[in-house]
Length: 423
Image (cartoon, rainbow, N blue to C red; front, side, top):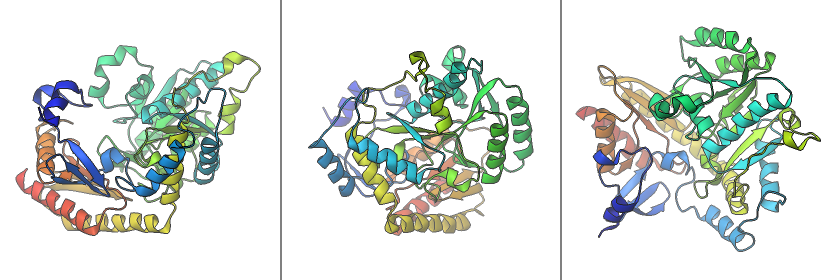
């Protein structure tokens, strides 16, 4: 029995309808922007394996930091104990995040980072004796798969089966060009009711929706409105964080800053599952009380895992190097050049670029499902041509490792051009 056959026998993959899926390639090796399967076929990882590997696969610098930590202290419970790597990591995060982010709560992944933020927002008002049990989110948002994060998400087929079990979320339009005033006015009306604990958003780019982009100026206005009405703001930077938008964080484009931030994915350079939810001192103080019941009773077995902290410290140190910052700008320029080259193609509706993120909407008739025939045809075509990309409906996007070469990017671009000729 082959590895692929054993995989089919035993494993249940995410976001997969196994009845109509084809056998998954068995990846056995990765280096830089490349992956190889069991048959020796080479793939360019054009989405950094769901946006987590900005410095490429098998990065020796991060691996050495992990090895060193493993031979010193692999794990210790964070309930009642602490350790040097987490103290160093929190100190580093306080230096690179917006200046109002003062306290750090560790968990396991993007969904749990969001879950912690939502629970903290709701309990903050509960601790004060106020009833605020609703939150505001954007339409077509995606914040994760745990129950609070799923409730905040607006892509219906992810959540339809659980509608009756989710907390109440009211959605406003994404303030894309032409929708700014509508989004702001509805937001003003909602926050004025004093019923909402928080507003959660993906800053500047909605990832799972197809890299939908909007401007920082309108987000600044929404944050100002929230602040005046004492509604907490939660920036979900799980996708956008650590350089993807051309700055360390998408919130670095803003004048106003969120009350909470959710980080994961590229935090450890794609090596170890880990997440952080950061908070202002004001939120932390809402739990600081002689009444034990007002504590945030939330935790994970591997909270603040020392090995993950070591990986995160190594990853952040790479992000701050001049070489990586130059690479980010180089990828950005390559994307802009490709956008100019492809945007007038008769099958291209529009293109979008921010930092290392590129998105292209294919001009098609009618509605195309998220995992519909067009998307599946494109996905199979890219895999057959040695490119790992996951189109969203009629949207193709690239979000490569920062160390991707110009030659590798050109192959990705030319393969997209070939794909357009077959749709």
